[in-house]
Length: 147
Image (cartoon, rainbow, N blue to C red; front, side, top):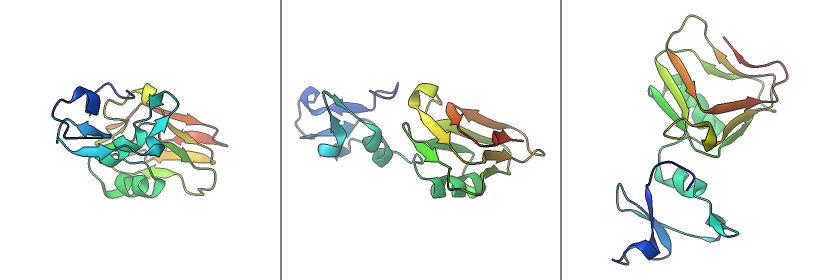
C-alpha cells in the first residue's frame, strides 16, 4: 500500500462478496471498482483510487483556490506532481494558520513534488503559523520558496 493507513480491504479478504473486482473503503463501505488503469505489473497503484475516495488535491487550479480561500488543512494527494514550468505566478500563501501536507500523514514517502518555474511558492512574510509537510521542491529557476 502507498499509505500508512489501512483504508482498503481487498475483495479476496472480504467474505461477504459485497465488493467484487474492486477495493472497499473501510471507513465508508464504498466499493471503488478496479479497472485496467489501476493495475501495473504485479502490484496495484492506489493513487487514482485514493484521489477518488478522498478530498485530497491533485490539480494546480484547485490547489491555488484552496491556498487562497480553503480550509486550514490542505492535503495533496500522494503521488501528485505539479509542473510549474509554464506557470508565471508562483503558488501564494497569504493567510496564516495553514497546514499543507503530502497525503494524510504529511510524509515525504507519499511523493508530492513541485518542479520547474522561476519561483514555486511565495509565503507572505507578515503571516504566521504556516506548516508544510512532506513536499519536495525541485528544479526552480530562481527559488523554490520565497518568504
